[in-house]
Image (cartoon, rainbow, N blue to C red; front, side, top):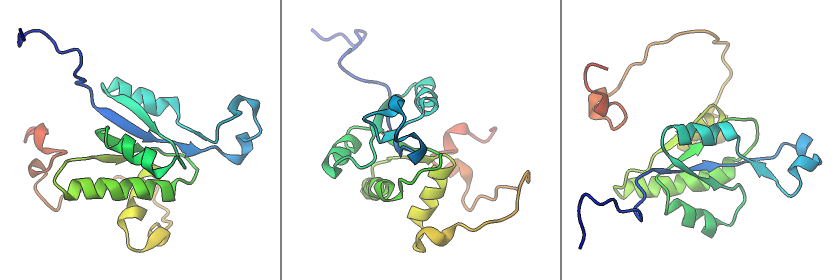
Length: 163
């Protein structure tokens, strides 16, 4: 008989986050340490997610689209990492799927760090890759002006008014 106080060990309570791999830089393609690989995920991103209590699944650049979609159907969010290598076309497929899921009413978050955030801007733009421009703005603090009440958003709402 089922007892509510007995834990269900078959049920995963941790979020599962997909991290997009990045193509291996040409400088490392002939390095024997990377033999047989053409992309990577920095361990720091995996540890970052694990430290927050999540489990990680790699989303491998250039894997077949059906494999990518199968993985996306089993995870709770996607992290687009920073770095210096191009995963724009692969990431666009992922973000288009996330948009469809979100538009259908299921919350499916995406996070971009550095290059990943820049790519999110590119994917959200109808201007292609020329949305980003160079500005000489270093070590400048700017105010954040919300266009809606932050307490009404999923990101800031749970923090309450004292945050």
